Length: 481
Image 1 (cartoon, rainbow, N blue to C red):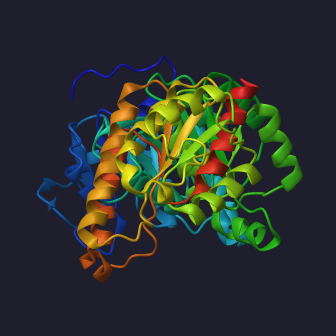
Image 2 (cartoon, rainbow, N blue to C red; image 1 turned 180 degrees about the vertical axis):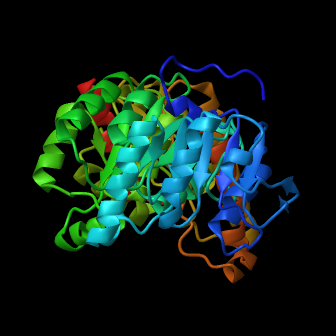
């Protein structure tokens, strides 16, 4: 592997950018995570030496295997530990001879079980790792996804790097964020699932990503924290440098109980978390879907410091509902100015005094082609901060006409967005189409056209409620800044 630029004294660089990796507990059995972690290194193209460790095997998945970590011929930056809890301490004793910097302790069934014996073993592992100078990610976590290094903990993750750094206590939720966010055009710089966090914790990772030049936005899912003051310092530092979007897991009674059995974290008072996020300048999301919506805005749009929107597209009912939803979310829909009315009169003499904001496509009739010019009126007007265009998937035309209208509108949205004169957001409903429904020309067309908007870096939302909720928080963030 080529020489890696690392920040002095920054141990997490060895986790995200290791020169070599050992998978202890590697396997050729697909039911074993030792199989999958080795598979990921091979599939995602990790360039450095890969050392599978399994005393029963001479090779695994085409790679020479070693009976123990001590038998590995070179130094090891990162150890991925997939062995049972009883074998962790002996493995730690082997680490200094290989100059191990970081161990990803996938191994679970420790303090999160609530059992005294497991809690005591976790403390013993924690203390011995500290004595040996080995830093630990976990235990009970999925570890690292670093696309630039060829490290991952799931299948089907994007190979391309992006600018979003992710700090998630839950590995499954991190997987959901990556796989669902990828469909919205999100790409990631570094992702870490950190589990029980008995050593490297969320505060350490916030500090790291705050200084990471490849990370422009940070997303976090936190169930609980052991050192509140340390977290506040790191949160404030990170949020002062780049946007931070966070979910607090365990907000209700049942969620709080689930937190303890999931990562042995202390959930804490919800009001206290709200206050902490607010004081630090963190944007709070309610769930993964809302987090993705917010990340899409940060990924695609410039700062917006006003909530005056122009809305166009779709029929009358759709526009009435959209206007209500937008205003209820705190956005405003200013009426057309006299100047815009004059331009409309030149464009459509028979409609100029009838059309308003939102623009109802159903009243245009034979003048429908003029609709293509309407975004320009909003874009040129200083009275609007951005434009929301609803793809007219509610139009009642026959299939061939319907398809042509959708394609024309998508092409038009992309054309105006490329001009970059004013932020544009698109709304296109995919409903709840199943696999068989994609044979229907309408759902098939939407499935084909939606990625065109995403590839053009245009935020695409399912409905106005999703768009307005995320936009309101996005605007509030930039107004505070």
